[in-house]
Image 1: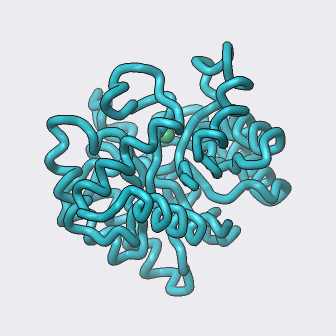
Image 2: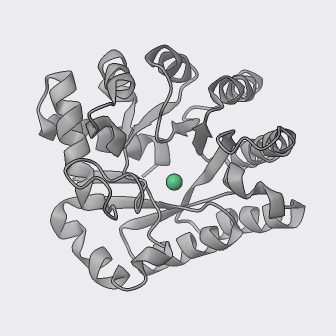
Image 3: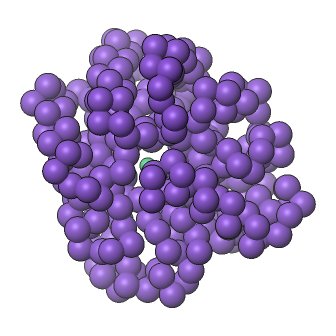
Amino acid sequence: MIFETHAHYDDECFDEDREELLSGLQEKNVGLVVNVGADLETSVNSVELAKKWDYIYAAVGCHPDEVEGFDQESLNKIKEMAINNDKVVAIGEIGLDYYRKEGKDFIPNQKTWFRKQLDLAYELKKPVIIHSRDAGQDTYDILKEYITSHKDIVNPGVVHCYSYSPEMAKEFVKLGFYIGVGGVVTFKKAKKLVDTVAQIDIENILVETDSPYMSPEPNRGKRNNSANIKYIIDKIAEIKGISSDEVERITEENARKMYGL
Ligand code: NI
């Protein structure tokens, strides 16, 4: 079965047909899904989805683009949710995003909430789902500090929708992180991600769609859903020179290990 490690089915673009879509995914070989929160509201929604659907689990946390309205009270609520719901399997997505470049004032604030949520993940013994865009070095530095100060962490988490160099991927892997590979790997201009997949072991890769975003070829530009993950698996199989079944099986194992399922 396919383990979809990152989706946002609470997104409003699924409002019209969410029920129908989610009731059909398992027939399409998608056996497990982690629905990921990006702020307080979407974290609550993720937990609700997990309560409703057996095969859906939840991650709760605050995305770097959403930290402006986030405060200690919000963090406490995230913590309560994670403690009180056994289907919360990770803290995320959290991290750094320097893509919107108006001034640098937002950076210290992003770093503060990134670190606080890492501390929460450690306290609750949960893996983290890292969102990192145009902030590779700072993300690495903070995660390295996190890992070296907590030597007992076994499965720290995943760098989701990985977009940096193969060399940097190897450094994240050395820290114990999985590399999340999404639809971009199927794009024509995806050389960097293709090289990354070629250069790291399949045992360090998770597959994900980030639905509704990032649809792989041949559905690029359309609303994404987890059934499209097969195109990502096929592409990884082609790069690695192994069968798609093997990629499916190993990435499922990897994800089960990371999320403890
Ligand atoms: Ni996401």
